[in-house]
Image (cartoon, rainbow, N blue to C red; front, side):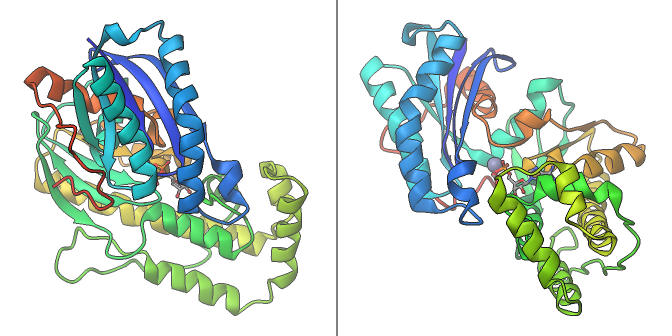
Length: 354
Ligand code: KG4
Ligand code: ZN
């Protein structure tokens, strides 16, 4: 049973072929990073235009690499939301057209459900599970049941974790996206140097907040004269778009490395303490951590060091960031249950999973 997955919710145009919900036959991701980097974030209008340019060749390549024809497809799965509506529309409309023209059933997928299923592509997961989805747009905790049932346990009240990484990096002249650069530099800093306070949440203690931390970083920078070093990093970025870790390091004094390490440690603590509390409160048999921020090596190491009594599933880095294999994987249980999506279904920017 082969499913063609299509993902276009943000700034990646992706298509993948997945067999029986677990074997990835192909996974093609066309990144728009080069387009958006110079604007310091994703520009929705440009994203839609890039998706339009990429969707046909990306789907064609995914089919070719998997040596799969349209007649081999059991279903076409496409992200319906949440995301940028103009971006979602490109992938979903393409999927609907293909579904209509070739008479192949359509399965609309929630992007978050895709990130959760990314973890199941690498190894089987025991249920009930708790899933922490941490990306540029989301910081959400779900209880996940066996039959694709989801219960929202907590979410960010302001910035997403990835957004916090991106904003801090931008503020300090490290460009976009910020997560990978901070991840590379954090090991060179003292993570205890800047004592940031952890957020205390009134009401649901499993909710997250990163705006206080972001403001604390802003105050820290304002209290110092960093203009020259920030300019040096902007110059580095202008000279070539992807400086190496060593180049970044040589443009970053120890105090700033210490700040980055302390910031990253605080984000990791905020994420893990709530994920662990959620898993304990539901007697979860596994913990899934997925989404772009799940690539973070410090987060992976910290989760390992907790020696939790249940397995922690991180998808491989390529499956943690946006991709279409996770969309096809999430569609497989729905195909088995005959849950198809009508061609009148709309792309929904704020589509909720639960
Ligand atoms: O899942 P994703 O590719 O797209 C969204 O759905 O948002 O996540 C992108 C986010 C960005 O905010 C990026 O800075 C962050 O994931 N990210 C990281 C790392 N790699 C990507 N954050 C921390 N450490 C990383 N290694
Ligand atoms: Zn995502």
